[in-house]
Each structure stands twice: as C-alpha cells, then as structure tokens.
Image 1 (cartoon, rainbow, N blue to C red):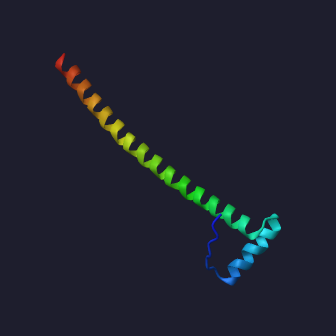
Image 2 (cartoon, helix red, strand yellow):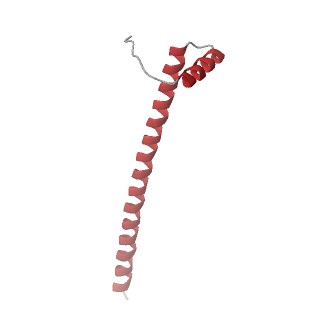
Image 3 (cartoon, one colour):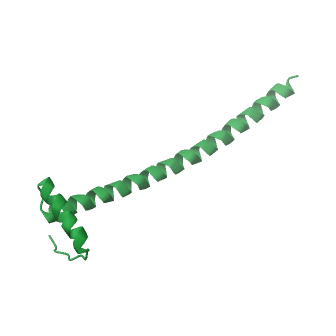
Length: 81
C-alpha cells in the first residue's frame, strides 16, 4: 500500500484519534473507513439523482403518450357520430 501524506488541522486530527480509539480502530483504519463511507454516500446520492431524473423524463413521456392517446380517442369517437 502506498503511503500518502495529507494535511489536516491539529483539532481535526485529535478528533479523529479520539474517535478511532473509542471505536477500537487505529487512525489509518478509521480514515479509510470514513473515506469509503463518504464516497459511498456521494455515489448513492448521485445514483438517486440520476434515477429521479430518469423517472421525471419517463413521467413527461408517459404524459405525452396519454395526451396523444386521449386526443386520438376523441378523434375516433368524434368521427363515428
């Protein structure tokens, strides 16, 4: 595994160390798990946004189809009278 150096405030480092200790993790384990959880949350939000966009597009398409069907039905019913 490659070692990477990052810069954070002493206050944040103290909070990380305290929390990691309470959880029974070392600093590296805590930071890895925290980063993975954050990345997963971001990916999930992005996925949900894409799904919502897709559902919105489908709703608009379904509405157009329903309006076209209703218009065609009115034309058919109007033509038989």
